[in-house]
Image (cartoon, rainbow, N blue to C red; front, side, top):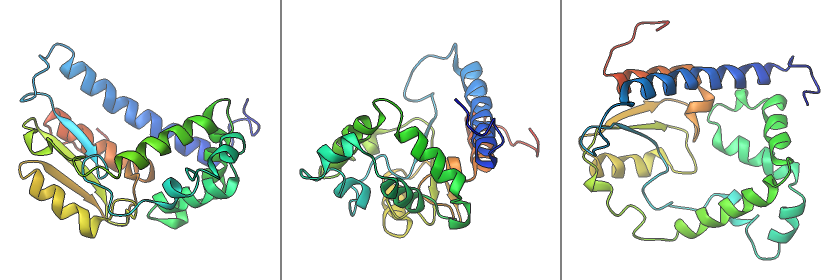
Length: 208
């Protein structure tokens, strides 16, 4: 059901973001469909949250997963939670429009999603405590690209980025000034462009 008949600016931007990244996926799939799956050949993409222990648990992991709060949130996902989370993961607050929050809230209300979100938060909370979370990171030898927003407050750029550079000295790092924890959504055209260039080994021209 589409209550606004597809006229929402955010729905347009969200669709455009999906299209851009689907093009990237198609190019990747086409190139590597017949490639052997060896760690030395297949490139990988990573955002700034996959390997190191979280320096501090985001509020979204702490409060909704609290033993007293959790049963309530499984049944009712308050809009306040969604609003706060979206503001935290976006670096450019001017992009956090009502349409953006509405979209996330609508998704959270779909059948099974509220409980699924809590399950995911519980897993993330548990993994954030592990000292060995980044074990094996230095054993990655295939080409890898790490994308990171300078305004990421969940996995802070200022403190965590240097650790990734040290752990992955041969990786390609792409830093996005002013972007937050999800640059692939905040600046989809830019990140998809960079991902395609990295994965295809080509220097793309504008509009490619």
